[in-house]
Image (cartoon, rainbow, N blue to C red; front, side):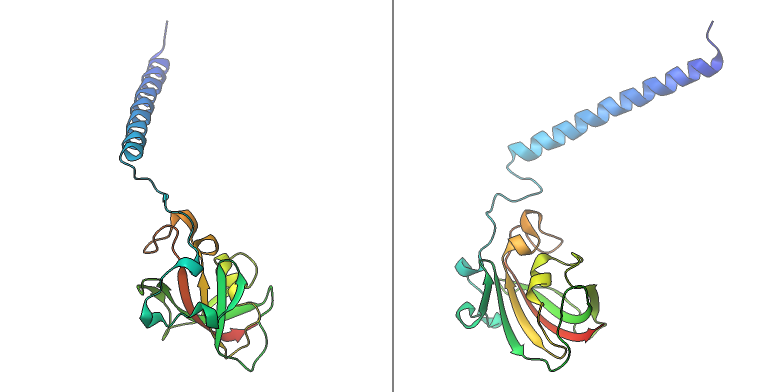
Length: 175
């Protein structure tokens, strides 16, 4: 003979299994709809290449005047600093403004507190780790990076998937 306690446990288990089955059907249906409509969380657009992008004139990007660090990373010192040099595993304090290639500003901390991170520790997107290396305190630099060094195929918030990014950065402090 079953006790009230075991009947209650069986009923709870059955309710859980029904809910789990229903949830899996809903998730499967949502995935199927998303795939059939051609939309998904990642983009079908290929990774961006700054060399083939068109930049908004207001950004003042001229890749031929920049130093090419890799196929998808360009830097240009706007002001060479006179302080200590940014090297791996040092904590940097920076101000920045970021734009999409079309001129849309997506983020900035100019006029606010400096953004701090440890250079080379993977705390920022790869384009930053590579793009600010060698700057000196007081320096200002423009960094143009393809999506492989930015937010990739997933994008992030206001940054669409596979977007080329343009940053103007200033190295304020180094510890």
